[in-house]
Length: 77
Image 1 (cartoon, rainbow, N blue to C red):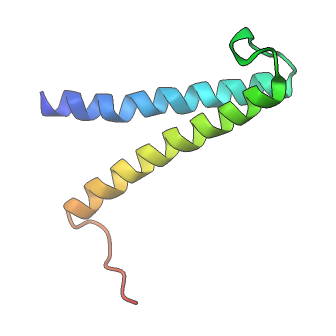
Image 2 (image 1 turned 90 degrees about the horizontal axis):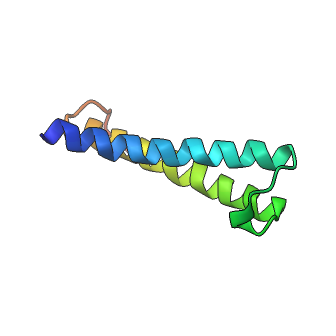
């Protein structure tokens, strides 16, 4: 059950990032969605935000897991 929850935690931001890539691609080709008031620029910014948030969450999740299992080197300042 714990693995299923962990999988959902990783998959949902992945879907969000994939949707962000789709919005960015559509805005480059000039296909604006109605939900963004037919504004290509607004759709581009929303896509970039979705992509950054999705990838950032996945990266943070993996980094947290690796630090918890002592797989990352210590940062000495």
